[in-house]
Image 1: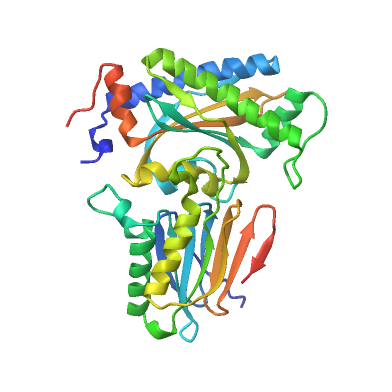
Image 2: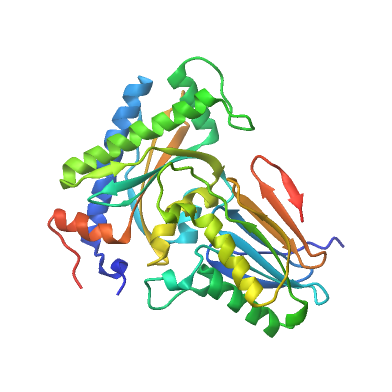
Length: 165
Length: 212
């Protein structure tokens, strides 16, 4: 029997947790950042696709936690620990944070990519989760897929091919 | 209460008319540039989640050529003109009348990129100037920015502003394209996304303010 691995998809401003042999993927990251938090010994991983750096920017009453770097990472860690991961063994891999369009004069929001990356790093550091690999910045869109069994993150771009980190 | 909750069917109909007027003028411009008949569809106006919006534009991983303009003036918002790569190549060939272009791999031709930006600029310009006449409001488009990449990555750039106040987006979508030989209708898509505060301005100017 050929084992067909199941791929869990994460949309924009969304998050999910998978256990091997399933894979987890998010497509079309631009200025957004894909954050993977995993525990290799338990072969469990969580992924979030964050859009904005800071939930205090929000002008809404009730917020979607997966949208903001600060709230998404807290929630992701809480969920993965609830599902059996050990908080001290958690590691992270991140990708995204591009600048897709080059504007000569732009508002701060046009440079959101680097701010998202900085916010994600800050939050991971506050939770003492080491970032073992990253592929951030530039001006290409990325699709990422994480395999909790091998702890490898597959990153695909339109013109620069595919790599694994 | 979110601005989206105040939008009634009357407002959606107005947005549809906005899409109709704008794309109608853009189609006329395209027809003039190409010297042939150009069709457009009936505009669609929908309130969608971000993921649904990206699906509507072709799916997060689909690679397209997109021209993005930021709108300033009395009204702020974002405008996208999306073309499938094949059609983008055809248009730039027809506009420059010289070489055969392809956007399948790098390096892209500078001339083709320039032609595409200009196409996006002209079409968006005619879309916006007709809206300006209709609403008596100023719409000043930025210099167009061109990007050939995944839909998810490009469209999300236009969602950042409104993602701070909402998880939903009001999409005014129109398609224009040419009848190629027999039947294929190859499409350019316009996506017109106003910033949250801009809806009040537009609707008030047209005499149907948002209530609530």
